[in-house]
Structures are given as C-alpha cells and as structure tokens.
Length: 212
Image 1 (tube, rainbow, N blue to C red):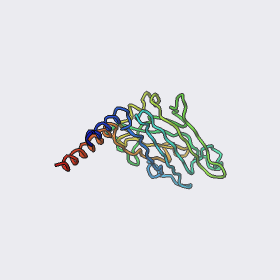
Image 2 (image 1 turned 135 degrees about the vertical axis):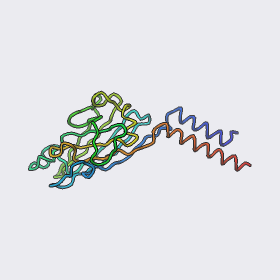
Image 3 (image 1 turned 135 degrees about the horizontal axis):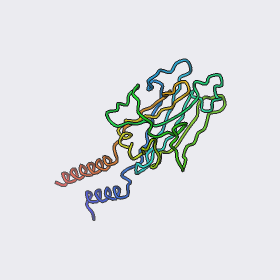
Image 4 (image 1 turned 60 degrees about the vertical axis):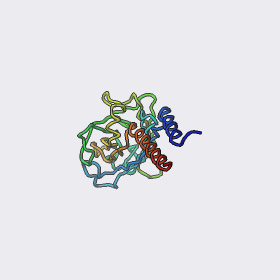
C-alpha cells in the first residue's frame, strides 16, 4: 500500500505531465468611461462586461463582451452618430507601463474595425441588440498566430498575466476610447505548478509530524 505522501506526489506529477495543472483561467472585467483619459458626457453612460478565458496551455485567449449604450450598427441611435462603434482592441505594453486611467498602450490585437487581427479561422461573432436597446455582444478568440504589427499572444502573455493590458471600445465621438477595462493579473503558468508542489510538501510534512 502506498504512503499518502507518495500518492500525492504521483498525482501531482501526473497533473504536470498532462498539463492539467494549468487549469483554465476565467476572469471577468467591467468596462467603464472612468477608465478612459477623456470623460464621456452628453449621453447615457456606456459600459460593458467582458468574460475572458485562457485555454489550458495559455496559447489562446477567448472573450465574450456585452456592451450597453454604444451603437453597434449605426442605426440604433440614428440621431446620434457620435456613439457609433468604430474599433475594439486589446492594448498592452511591457513594464514600466502603469495600467491606470489616463495611461495608454499600443494595440496588440484588434477584433473589431481596424486593425482587425482575427485571421482564419475568424472567431469573431457580433450580435447587436434589438427592440430599441442600444449595444450588443461580441466574442472572439486570440489565437497563437494572431497579433497586431508583428506581435502575437506568446509575446504579449507576460504583459497580460501581469495586468499591463486593457480592452478598449472606440466610438466616433471618442476615437481614443469610450469604455475600457484593465485585464486582471493572474499567476503565471509556472507559478501554478510551483504552488501545487509547495502544497504537497506542506501536506507531506504534516503527515510525517502526525506519525511521530
């Protein structure tokens, strides 16, 4: 019969070998006007919620965004063209970039308008609200070969994991961005494995102390 510590170590080794130790990371962010350099005034406040999910190897990043009070078609508010959605991107930069309201970084992946970096297979899905509602939903996936101006997800992953990135929706009236959310920092994949090893070590020490 295997000792408990041996069983735990074997289980952890299996997880690391199979890649399951890098569990899917899902997080939600809220886009607001307050995160932008310029205050949005003169119409109902726009906002949005975005759910992000890394795959188990951190080689793709999927998202699904729901946006309110930004015109997705140009016809939801025909008397006001300033709220028309023009572009949407993920922006990121290396340290010492400080992701706070007012600070900007370059586009690393565009998923609506220009630049548009969804290459084949194009995962972008856009659905505008109907029934008098203004806004819509948009989803997509940043695949390994995609990126703006020669960059890609692998190159930007350290910035994304460290929280030095944001998602930005641009409109006609606010070409620099109308709503923005900063991506939530999460542990790097290697840190996840180290955390698991540390946990097993603690459990093992406690087991041995109990035996004594």
